[in-house]
Amino acid sequence: MAALLFGTFILMLAIGVPVAFSIVIASVVVLVKGDVQLLMVIQRMFTSADSFSLIAVPFFIFAGDLMAKGKVSKVLVEFAEALLGMIKGGLSIVSVLAGMFFAAISGSGAATTAAVGATLIPELEKRGYDKARSAALIAAAGTIGVVIPPSVPMVLYAVIAEQSVNTLFKNGFIPGILMGGILIVISLWDAAKYNYPKGAPFSFKNVAKTFLRAIWGILMPLIILGGIFSGYFTPSEAADVAVIYAILVSLFVYRDMTLKDLFTIMKGSAKTSAVIMIIISCSGPFGWVLANWKIPEAIASGVLNVSSNPYIIMFLIAVIILIAGVFMETSSAIIILTPVFLPLVKAMNISLVHFGIVFVVGIAIGMITPPVAINLFVASGITGLPIEKISRAVIPYLLGLVLVFFLILYVPMVVPGLM
Image (cartoon, rainbow, N blue to C red; front, side, top):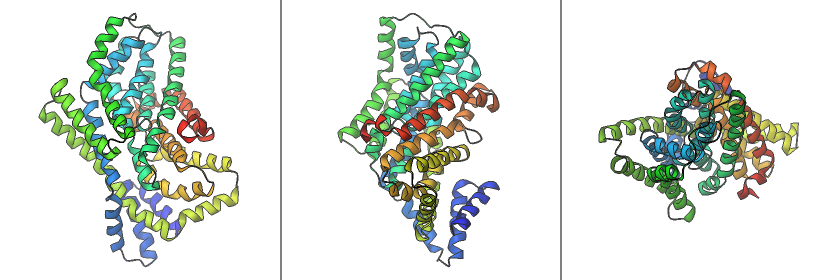
């Protein structure tokens, strides 16, 4: 049954069937073969989407889109440049820090890349930075968008693995900072190699001025994450607060958005959310098939027969995660592979929170690995450069992120909450 399930799924993907429909078709084929009533498909699809925690997904997407398409990203970049622009290649550091900060607002890699890229890539090009490498750096920084909380993939993993969203969020900060740190190191090396210019001299007056303009954007992650970790509201409620805050700031503080713009953004966010929710729904029958025929347990038993060394097994899982990121969209990979990996991870007594962080970081790297490299496509759309050129330029950043990925995998104490 495992061969039939995964074989059908891969065949459907190969002939161009969308991921959600590939999942449900593969499940139906196995159910027909097993003589199970197909009414179960509808029941499981409804049950999968009927979760309070999943309310956070569309609202975080909507809040991220509101902030990305408004003035917030611009004023945050101005503040970061006032702080660090005087360093040689300082605008590269600003690009990474802006990506990290926007990650704490959007929860989306593509939204982070779009917001930071639209603001900074033209400025980087004007100051003599290599256009392809600048686009690649911002795309790489966009991967942090799903690691630093709030994170949509972490919410999905938490629901499937029955883990606390709060705990996953708390453990996402250090990995996100490590990812940003390695990107900054590589960008500084680039600055020395290509002799990138310094920005304007440091000025307390300019820092204060840009800080006052950016204060409303800076407050957003503090309100969201502070509310979650202090217990004032759940992650789902925090997502609602984020949307209300983003609307108020855009309409009445920066006044960079009309009601018509708001409606347009809402439609775009609804489409993005619908794609994720249909995948979640279709994963219901898929998960039932996995559980009914004990496929994950069989896979775990087979792997453990190959080796009982947890380091080797985790390496194999890590390689699968990285490969999955090359061919699958982030949310799809989380939804499909989590039920498959869980029995194996539990058998090795590995923390499900640690594994969740590893999974999210690994699958985030897939956002800059073609052919399914959404951040590279966003950067290509902003710059007009061919995807192949940006793909070559992103290699140093990709290698740096993979290094951080294996550090998190094998040295869990770098994440304080796991010690």
